Length: 269
Image (cartoon, rainbow, N blue to C red; front, side, top):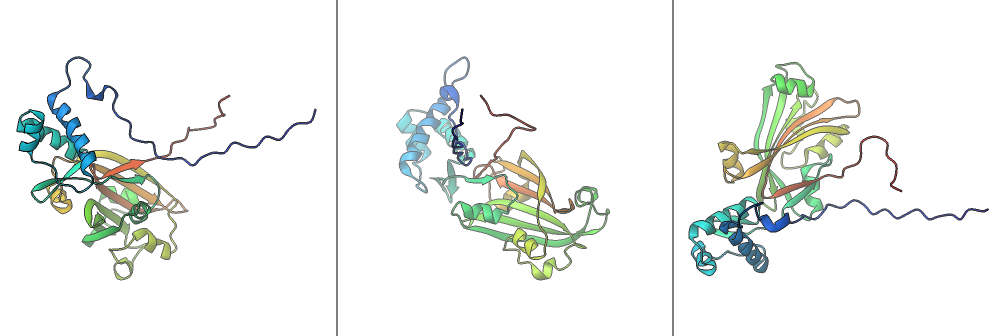
């Protein structure tokens, strides 16, 4: 019996999943929905009607509209601010734009922001030379006390401050960095001009609160959760190229990753 060729199935490229609503709309296992949460849901619906950048009604106006206290309205708006739905603009509260969605790839911040149609930018804070401590020496595989460059920059998206990044590189490996590199541009693009190819990295992500200095630099609230990423990037030979500490505003950033099963697997029947 002759076999009939079968066309292979078309596989769509992976896409980021949509954000799913919490089940039961925040109702606790036992008890009623908290009043501030009810108000938060109502204000959230108002935000959709207002559109990006619109000024919200005052706390007093919301309190009168929903028949609650200003304290309840304030708590609802505080949570919406932490979630990135609203933000301060001078003395007013305005609706915020969508979060930047960065895939967890070995690519520069500049490249990631441009892919979303936003204008990336970096503002230099510190460009200094210092001696490697124990942690940096282990990360870069150099001796303790060896000189390293420390490059600290504010991360911008359409002129909005959204993060703070510190990069550490060996002075011995990149002796001309201060003379050749423009801190307002992509470091990864510069590294490629030196013949360095970034191949893999180890990265750790956790939530933290910003320090007083970081709050002042980024211009955010000390109560706002931040996403902290620590990365060690390596070249073709497995040699560390950089150690990076990146701090992103939790209300303006989210990250996606495409996951695959570990080890051999077979298709489902």
